[in-house]
Length: 307
Image (cartoon, rainbow, N blue to C red; front, side):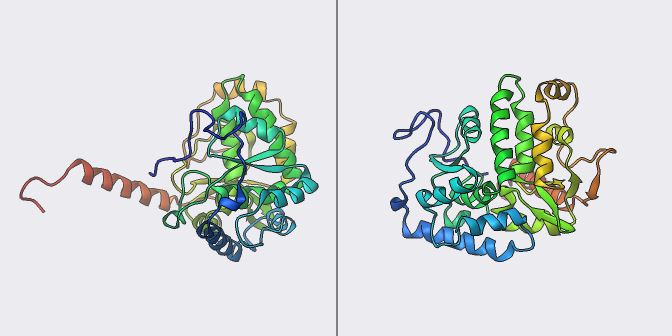
């Protein structure tokens, strides 16, 4: 795995106490703008019929089709008018409490860098394409915008219950890798899928992953992995369902109940799951075998005289 390159112990020089920095849009190079355009063209060509209607409407409403990395001054004028949100530039990953505070106050922190050509198909850390293309169009939807602000407020409260890892799973399986039922089929609303060419196809087309109806308790018990495609996807019936279930839930007793239940391993199904698609898990098994073979080769180098 590539190392994270934009992780800091404290705000770097030039950053404010809340970790924000000037976007300095003029400093992006022609190559960086060209990378945005390349990624944008590739994703928008294949997302109609795959992405949630709220996402596609957000692309149009925010005029993200304009060439080059978006200028936040222009983008925020449209986003603020729609839902009161704004995008703020940050140097990289920010501490949890800072992240939650930004969300609670309708600010979305976006990494102020873009991937290199050799990283076009995979980047472990979130760059400006993932953050702005993947996340921001959904923030133009009033229901999802309210959900994200509520998540930020809930995140701040979770720090008092030693339950951050449980709440992080809710973000992972909704905001990053969520699917929604729409017009009789499944669509993508999670930014981690929407910004990934490969996973945009895998999440909907492949027989390998499980697709399960969303259940709040189930999701918050479910482990996840960050280094490959998902083995389970959780499907909501509507954005209103997502908002209502989270806003109307008292998370304090939920955290107590969760602390007494075992975590659910990646890819596992439970008898009570409402399964839409029971996956073969063929992709995950193949990846595990390849990983095992690689480790065996590395741990048993050839002796002198061997090929």
